Every structure is written in C-alpha cells, then in structure tokens.
Image 1 (tube, rainbow, N blue to C red):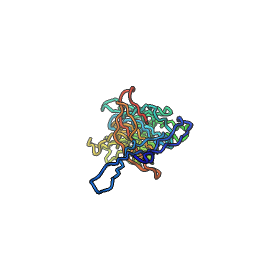
Image 2 (spheres, one colour):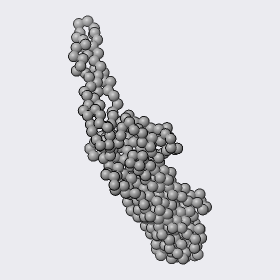
Image 3 (cartoon, rainbow, N blue to C red):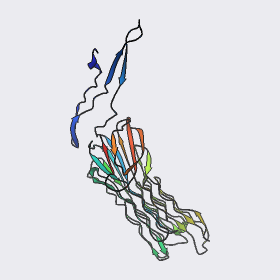
Length: 356
C-alpha cells in the first residue's frame, strides 16, 4: 500500500488550564485505505472508510444550570404560594475530564391535604460544592388567628392571609457564590401575608427573578408568584414562585381571584367564592423547573443541565442512580454543542457524571 501515512489522524496540540491537567489534544479522524482489483480492463479503485473516534471534550467552556426543588404551597384553601427552588448558573466553566462529579436532584415540597407541607429539597453538584437550596414552603391557614409565615428557602414562601394578624413572607437566601468567577445564584423573598379585609388573600412565593406578590384582600386578589429566570442556553424559564390562594366567606359577596404562578413552573393559587364553590383549583409547581406550588399544592422537582461546546458529544458516563431525560444538539454563542439534561436522582452512591 503506497503513501499509507497520508491517511493517519493528525496529533492534537497540548492544552493548559489552572483547573485541569495539561494533555495533548485528540487527533483528527484516521481512515483505512483499501485497494482491490476490478474487472479486467478497468483501473483499480480506491475506497476510503472513515473509522473516526466519537467526539471528545477537553473540559473547557461548560455552561450549566442547577435548580433546587420548589417549596409547597401552604396547606388549606388559604395557603400562601411556595417559593421556587434556588437557581445556580455557571458560565464558561472548566471541568476536569476523567473525574466523577456527584449530582443530586431535589424533590419538590409536598402537601398532605391536612396539616403538613414542606420546603423543597436541595439540588447539589459537587463541582465547587454547589448547592441550589430548595424553595421555602408557603404559609398555612389553620384557623382565623392561627396562620403561618412563609418559610425561607432558595426563594421564600408567601405568607398566609389571617383574620387579625399580618405574617411575614419567607426570605430568599440562595447563596450568590460571588467568590466564584462565572457562577451566580438567584432567589427572592416571598411576600407578607395580609390581614382579612373583605376576603382572605394569601401572598405569592418568590422566584429566581422576582419577589412574590402581596395579596390584596380589599380588592379580593391573592398575590402572584415571583417570576422565574430564563437560562440563556436553551431560552427556557426556571424557578417561578407559586401563587397564593384567595377565599371569601361570611356572605361578603363579590368575587375573588387566586394568584398566578410565576413564569418558570410556578403553580397557580386557587380561589373560592362565598358559598363554598371552588372556581379555580390550585396547581402544583412544574416538575424539572423547581417551580413553587400554588397554595395547597406541591412544588416541582429540580433539574440539572450542562452544555458542552462539542456537537454530538457522547463520551460521558452516568451513574446508575441518575435519570437522563434528554440530550439535544444546541447552538449557543454560534458554537454547536450538546445539552445534557438530568431530571432525577436516587441515593448517594452512584449518582455521578464523568466526562471523558
């Protein structure tokens, strides 16, 4: 076989970074040259068969999103909206290849319909020990003078509306990670739950991009959930707060409007008219967004997404306890890349991802 060397893949140049080991890049695809005889009187024919390796990644230029589970809305018809799970975004990050990173996806907070409600669970990514804190649950209404404040979380839950008292909303305490270049956390407060004034109108939970809205009993309007935030890589919104619920009793008349969930998976609050009819049911936060639940409903589960600047990237390994819901080819900043989405995890032993 003549000139066989012309068909070998080229060698890669060395790369360097403070966050991963220097090593040579990967060569270009090689090929096999096959020369075979053809029918008499015709020239030999050469066929080139591409035997290239799958795409690889050097660990540089990652974009990722980590969202905690959304908090539940407060128990009962009059509950405040749940706070969204905290949202952590990484931009232009360098990860170690060949190193397993642990990932845990937080569940949404739950409501059992009687007296129990809960914050969302944290989502974690072991790269730089990142945590997206679960959303705070909304305040609950147990009796006229027995109501809850919203609870702190990634974003805080909204306070319930009381008869003779005002209660605070929960604070949004998502760590901003300001000490880490290119990594930012987002979370906001739930709104204060107001006193009765012709209606009970609880307040909304906070979202990644805005605080929850306060209920307005005088106008018979419950508070909306705080807006979620758009992730620029896939242009989708995450971590919207849940809307508060509203209720009119004692023959007050008129209508009442439940709060609307914040864009990014926040659930709607319910409204209940005088006489007992429910004209709008509450809805839960949307799974895989970290949205807070509307008053009386559960929060949505969190999510982890990572974009790597290599098209058709396949050389990564997931632990058996991670659930990969989608792999998409996404062009971001004019670069063709691969978006990996992980929506659930169980246990703690094999919930890892490793990039090769």
